[in-house]
Length: 424
Image 1 (cartoon, one colour):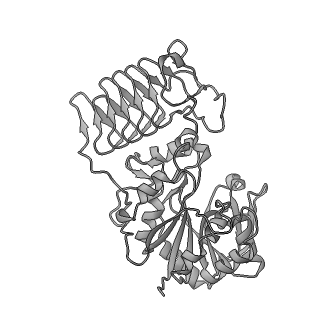
Image 2: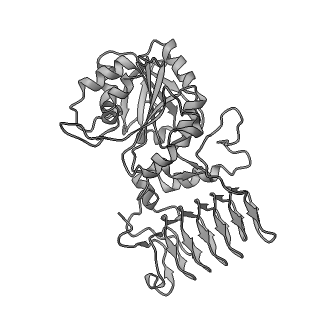
Image 3: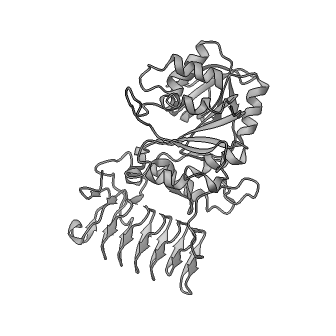
């Protein structure tokens, strides 16, 4: 029987519906970030940097790209004979098969996997946050306090506290109470959805609650452990942490990477962010090309001008094209004479010549104003935009479009253009 002190279970099945067309065909943790990474690289890199070498990645929604990216874990040094990284999709059992219905149900369905490592502690992580955290320090805190459950929590402005699960602690950070999205919060310590459990505590809670529909950590498992009198502690984290759950927070987190002194530093020697990279030639910037305050991925060719932007790998930006305040993901081709302002363009998009994106007045999006807002124009993956068209702010395009899809060559601000067959 193997023995691991702590194993990690990384929940990566999220649909990320508030990212709109960016996640219509790909799980949120597999969305590109920062020019060359994917969101899941951050928690995986945290694991290896923290000495956690056994990680179960629980996938569900659109897992193909995520599975291909994680592979056998080589970039994170997680290709181990004992431990390493394992992809754990839902699977058919002889009696009845079921999808993962809640965060804790997904963990419950993989009790046998965890059991096989006979761990003392289990670390539960989410696959869709951007942050650096040393889980070993959190484990030391857990042990020092004799905790059975430790919840990572960070201070948030009190006026924002109602959006989070809030923990109420005593002066030693022992949890007295917690409230899920309270209207009148009694504390500003917000749960980050990162937990360390004693294995025995976690297993008995999951077994006891197994029949609870949509079994969830925040709603069911944590309250159950609290009611049973298990000592729960809050580990206060004060580093950078970003939930990139909306298009605007995703855009902001990318833009923060290009600050002169970025709050979140991708370049630290002692805390590397690992990723699975294609072998690409160096980037090329032509003599009349210009790049200011931007990240440019490998294999990208810039013939135009790029300001304040995050450009992925293998991208082509044509002559006389100007890109500002935008995120352009891998392998996208942008023609010549284009103008892009505050655009998020997904992978493998083809944009014709003379296209203008993000132009005009800001108007509320007609179909999903809660998704497409803050003046961002969003183009879904594998989309094609014909020559010479103009697309306004808060607009979204997804699919292989043709000139007939644009009235007088224009898609006004706030409009949604999703071609049939591309929304699935």
